[in-house]
Image (cartoon, rainbow, N blue to C red; front, side, top):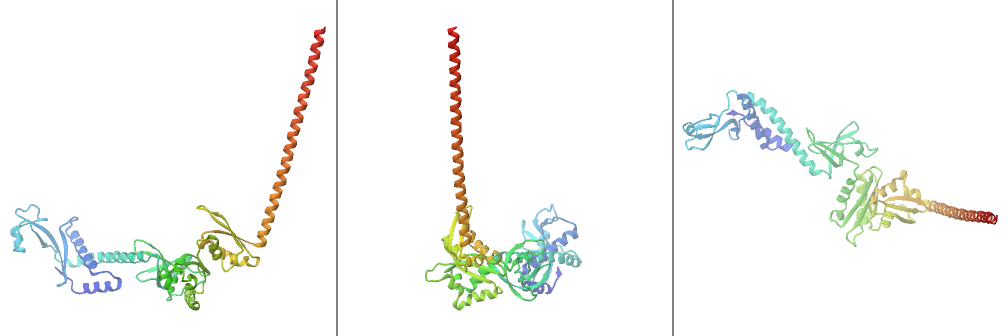
Length: 411
């Protein structure tokens, strides 16, 4: 047996506190390392009856070979005589199994080198599995982290047992990410790698808004108010459609809170990002009108509503056109993402002009159709006149022939 002492168990306790790796994992790794080292030492690749045993009370570890007690020994590596077995255990009988220590002399240094490599590998694998299991459960949820550094435009965020990566496309444009600051991020994905799993987080995902509303609005947490859809352009503006499952509860008012306290907390968390809270409706016309707020709407015409296309034509007052479209088309773009409808917006004057142009084209088409009808009628008349002329000529030629024949008969 090899004396280990209490240092191993102290290291196990420290690893369990810091990384969550249990003592059983370390002990199992050490025993496997001992067996691997023994096989190399005796130059025996396959030894299924060899195992390492750690005595926690004495702090000693040794390699043991399990042998079957038989009357006549055929294979000394697998069998032992009853007489020899009795020297180890007086109560042993035939067909019993006994464990015989086979730890080589001066085996401590060899075992230590092998154990170091195996334990390091096992700790890394155990840590990787713990991180993978933990963040697979957190995938699709909000968590808090601390900004570590910025590397190649990627922000490295510590979220507990590992550092996550926030790519540039998942960052809020124009925001400065200072190392040491706490940040709420959305766990977007967990990629399994040969080392620690790679966790991808986002600070611009629309689900962050959902999580914040669920935290701040008890009615959403209780299921009284339901979030139907969210569209977000991080750092600039968000639209969120809500509905109430209780007729006595105003969905928009619940999200705003008393004197705007709830919405202001969320806006502050999102660095003063604008938030439009709109009422959801099963009626597409009403839903589109609400989604385009704060612009006033004159009319909404549904152009297509099927599984292939959803299109609507919206008319707004002339002074509301820029507000309805938004800066760089942001308002209508967010309304499209929120509702799922393709929205074409025109002002009243533009709509009237389009109607006049449409009517003019219809008149032109009608005039063209009438001219074509007259031309076709004229062609028909000409063809009839031509046919009549040909018939007359045929009659004349027939009369002349008959006259000639008559004269010939008289002669």
